[in-house]
Amino acid sequence: MANQLTGKILYIYPSQQIPSKDGSKTIVKRGVVIDCTRFDPYTGERGFENTPMLEFIGDRCAELDKYQVGQIVTISFDVQGTRYRNKDGVEQIFTRVQPYRIELRQAEETNTPHPKYP
Image 1 (tube, rainbow, N blue to C red):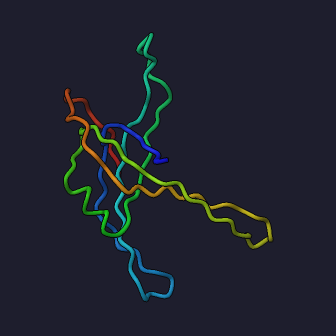
Image 2: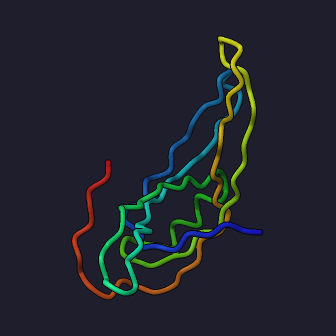
Image 3: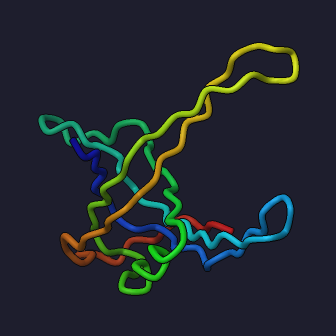
C-alpha cells in the first residue's frame, strides 16, 4: 500500500550533489517542503503545523522542475527502515521516507505569504 501526503508546496530546494564517503560516487537529492496542516471540519480551526520536507533522490529530482510554490500536490512515498548497532552496541533504527511520485492536484487559489526556507 502506498503512503501519500497532500499539501501546498511551500519551498523547493535546488538540487544538491552529495559525494559518497569514499568519493567514488555522487548522489543527487532535492527537497520539497509541503504544508499538510489539517483543519477541523466542524470549527475550521487549524491543527498543529505539519510541514514535512521530502527528499527526492537521483533521476526523480527532475520531477520537481514541473512544480512551483503554491501548488497543491500529492506525494507518494515509501517508508524504509534499517537496523544497526551504534558505537555502544545498542540497536538503533534509521528510518527513511523516500518519495517516488508527485502529482498536481490544483493551483493555489489565494496569494498568501509563505514562510522563508533556506
